[in-house]
View (cartoon, one colour):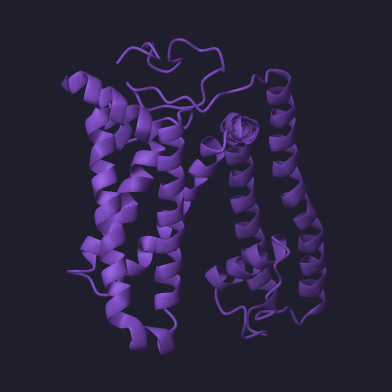
Length: 273
């Protein structure tokens, strides 16, 4: 009897393919959206002073509902820690904890806006499997590119350090903006990334030449990582397979093939509860 109840609750809470599960998720999205709107409006001074008690009451109502939902999710999965430490499990936890922290830390309830991340479930609720698949492809490409990007970032750090030190040598003593190597490195980062705040600018001809050179090199900073990730995405597109919204009851992972009978992460049956 207990197993049947858990299976039923699991299908309602985690699966979006059943009518009850779909309605549960739609209501959940509505509550998430309303809670984020409530927290955002609460920061408006004129409204906060007038409706403070209402905002506090709504905040606790939403938090209690989400807390109950969070513990139901833990109860209905085979391996609770797999869900707790999963991406959605951590998002669910951090979306409810700020309200309780507000009892001890003033202002921490504003972190409730992290609940907006829970709206990512819209892709699986409305069976936007194509978008989920594309998102999965991007994440895989990012992971595959991580080593190349880290090497690239290492050389960027060396570059801004060298340019900062050189600019300190060129501009130091003549320009109050370049009063130390760390400040000069800050300038080189701002210039290389083409942000250009303009709070520190070179005055000497040599400094302006180095500045122009660094600005031109800034285009490569944008182009190189983009090219690295793009090449990986092209490779992922070649190996791409359609994924479903099905949720593994054992390890709480998603992203399985449409015809999957077993979880590709833990090997457990997708239907055996």
